Image 1 (spheres, rainbow, N blue to C red):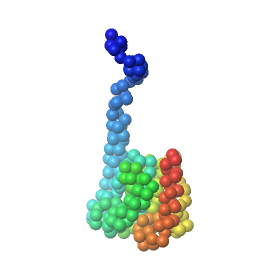
Image 2 (image 1 turned 90 degrees about the vertical axis):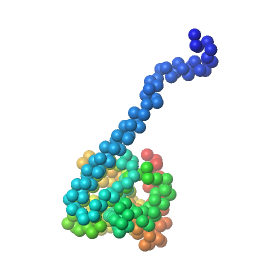
Image 3 (image 1 turned 135 degrees about the horizontal axis):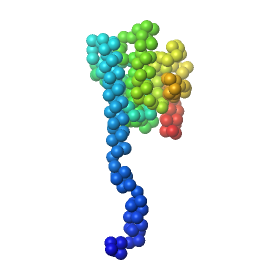
Image 4 (image 1 turned 120 degrees about the vertical axis):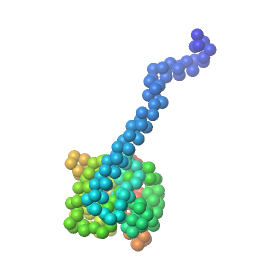
Length: 220
């Protein structure tokens, strides 16, 4: 009876929607799934970093190990905390962090679009004797986050996996990859913002790196 009071266009729309599962269309199941995924990753990361603190037996409770979106396909890795990070209890903070935010914003990477962490989690590092310790931690970290791309900030971070001593001027702007078991993570090296604060003449090179990185990540 209702049909005779409705236009043909409205009837066609109603018949079309009746063939679909409207509950699924307006359901927040997908949103819930994403939230559950993020919560699960954050729980695993929290457990991992509690293990790190216990192993390091740090006097300071340095729980500023990461920030950003653990579900992002983009992971950004710095080298280690500096004095500002320890003072502010925040990863990549102070002038270094402010410059990094400007660098990432310039290529449309806001906080919700990336996940940020460090290779090392204490300031005074005996790299030679503790490299394997931190390598094991990073492998566990990568298995949790599973990024597609990793932006490596600076030569210490870039040289970490192959124990090389390449200088940043030789390796910036270059693509590579890390293989962990059967997982492949695409890496790209650019300048650590702390270097750019000391050597601002390299900002132009950094900008060219960032544009190259942006063109790749937004292509996929």
